[in-house]
Every structure is written in structure tokens, then in C-alpha cells.
Amino acid sequence: MTTTFAFIGFGEAGQYLSRGLQGEGAVVSGAYDILFDAPDGGGAKGAAVRTALEERGIPAVASPADIAAGADIVISAVTAKQVAATGDATGPHMKPGQIFLDINSASPGAKREASVSVNAAGADYVEAAVMSNVPPHGHRVPMFLAGTAADKAAALMTPLGMDVEVVGTEIGQASSIKMIRSVMVKGLEALLVESLTAAHRAGVEDKVIESLGESFPGLDWRGKAGYHLGRVALHAARRADEMEEVSETLRDIGVPPTMAEATAKQLRMCADMGLREMFIDDLPEEITPFVAAVSAKHSS
Image 1 (tube, one colour):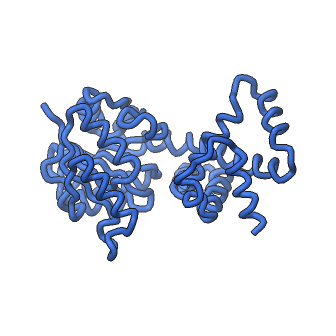
Image 2 (tube, rainbow, N blue to C red):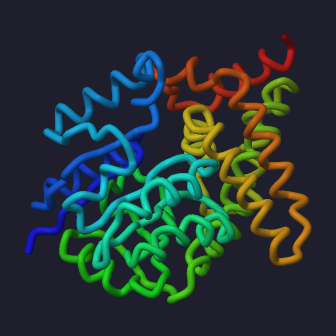
């Protein structure tokens, strides 16, 4: 049986996932992106999304209400702030037997809110926590699934080469893992930005990295820092949004989000510096261009 997917949100994640799924023989029946609703069609970003759809032979769909027609699995790949609204806009138009797969980095509370309209229509809401960067894994990126239909979703996804693990039947179990893990993962990125920018300005960048290697042997700190700073350069805004969801998650379970809030602030600062625009066409492989740019922004 051929599994049919549809996408709400067709940014980096949607494009990588759709390419891999089509390569496995799955059908992608259509995609909707909020950029389509902008007065100018989303400008250059909207044009890039439409080009990506045309290249894959995927129809552009006019609204979330129309996206579910004919799809076995509707994948929600939007921003954290749009998670609940996307569920509300799509859920009433789904039918029993269909799966709404929410892969967004959002708090358990936001996931539960998004599930209400989907479940009310008799469709199945399944949350997915994406546990690594989509590139370079593509559709094989590791995911944790939770929800009453998580096993059903896994049975459809696994034959297509997707790396999924069911972690529970309650909405919020997968996203709790993702959110709490991000305190460490995104926190490390914020620490690297602050520490290495300071090291650069003090003229001791090489010695600081050398010392990190001595304190934590076995880790290629220069390579690790270069990779993570590159991800910050391109995706700081999205990461800041995620850390705000992390903070909400921690508050909900009674843990003060001290580090999560500081990380969100650091990443938001990087986003506001315009680093994405600066590096998107020429992402440096070395640490120095990134920290030099941040240092220059601090001075301006």
C-alpha cells in the first residue's frame, strides 16, 4: 500500500522530508505554507517555496482546510508559535483514519492544545519529537512518537525508512523529552557563542579551545563549535522560539527555567544581529568569522 503525505509548512524540514519520502515511493499530495497568504505571495521566500514544490511535482494548496484531502498522514512543520493554530485550522477538515503528525518543537501544552480539533474530528493526532537536525538525515532523522495512534503511525513510517520510536500513548511524552534535552543542547550553543566571542575579543581564542580539549578529552571542540555556531547563524530565531517553549515546559512542571530563558535571550540576540542574512550564502567552516561578526555587532 502506498502511503500519501501532505505538508503544512514547507520550509527546510518539509523539503528534506518530502524529498526522502518520494524517494521511498510515498506520494506527497500537496503542501500549504503560510507564506502563500502574504499580500506579495511571501516575496522571495514564498517564491523559493513554490520553486521547491514545482521541482518535486507537489501541488501548492491554498489553505490548511484543503490539505487533508486524500492524505494518510498530514505533517505539520510550522513555527512553534503556529502549532495550536495549525491544529485548529486543519483538524475540523480531517476524517477518521487520517493521522495528523505534529513534528514541531513546541511545549507539551501547545501539542495538547493542537490535538483538540484533530481528535474532535475523529482523526488521530500523533506528536513527533525530532531528535536531531533534519539535514543531513532527511526523512531518516530520528523521531520519538507519542499518542494513542503512535504505533499506527510508526507502522506506516518505518517501511519508508523513517527512524521512529514510540515513547508513549499520551500527548506530551515525546515533546517533554525534546524540550528538556534542549536545555542542554541549545544551552551549549549559547555558551559557545558567549565564550568564544569573548575569547576572540580578548585575543585568546586558540588557547581557550585548546584548554577545552584538555578539560574534555575526546571531543573535537573546534569542529563541534564550528558546527553549532553555523546552526546558530542560520537558525537562531527558530532556536530562540524553541527555547521559549522549553521555558514554558519547565514552568508547567514546576522547574524554574533560569538557563532556558538565558539561552533564549542569547539566541534571540543572535537572530536580531542578522547573522542568517550575513552567512546564508557562504557559511564559514571555521569559528573565527562567526565570532568576529558577533563581536563586531556588539561594538556597533
